[in-house]
Image 1 (spheres, one colour):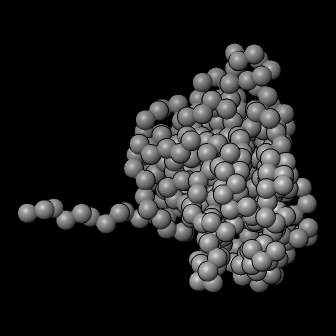
Image 2: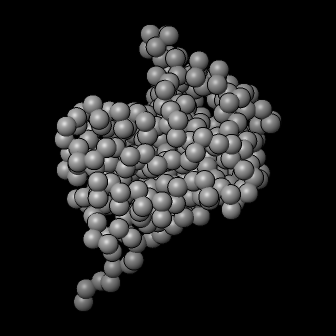
Length: 332
């Protein structure tokens, strides 16, 4: 009599992150967690709930309300052998740690000729969806993609979040780990304890033939919804999830565009000098004369974000906007 296979286990994005943290802390006592409210409160988005009880206050450390102190302490701990995971409550507040992260952590390995490294992760939460206003809702990934020595990741699914977090913790370079506020409750298939995702490798989330849609973080799900609608109209869209912002996996993007001949880049960050511009430029350089239509970018206008969820939704590209842009590309 054959055994009945159990259905795949599903978890939320936040649960997947918690599993990743738990497993890495269990496996390596050098891994510590520090930030505002990460211990007794369980994290601003409940990612670290239960970790204080398991690992104690020497490894799950509630810090004062000073982002500069949190990341500075993480850098110091990393330099002397720890593997800290620092939580910054909002991406916007990374502006307060630019010296520690950009001028120090990202340069440490090079400046000391490899004698020191900075194996640290800085977890940040970005994006719209809560009407949190202009100082709590920005998408700033393009700033940090510009910094040599700093790795930047932005997973869109629970499995990728867990796999990339485990890889980030094990990496000897500093990693900025971007979590979108709108993803924490999103469910997906769970990943096992040995699951990791390599930093620097994009993923084709949906195959297609007529055009390539490149996205990352929460916008991947917008792109997938648009691809589903396009399929009903007879348009086959391939969706590429970057997963990693730096280093950027242009090989996967270029291979996809080489097959489809059309590229639409969708991101929540503002348009000017966004990551979409870099992807568009490199695609135009590498596929000059081979594209069936000009590369198209779809992004948030260059405006300050409002403290209103309805207005947020009017500004940030949605599935309908992606469908409309894709139609134009295919018809051109």
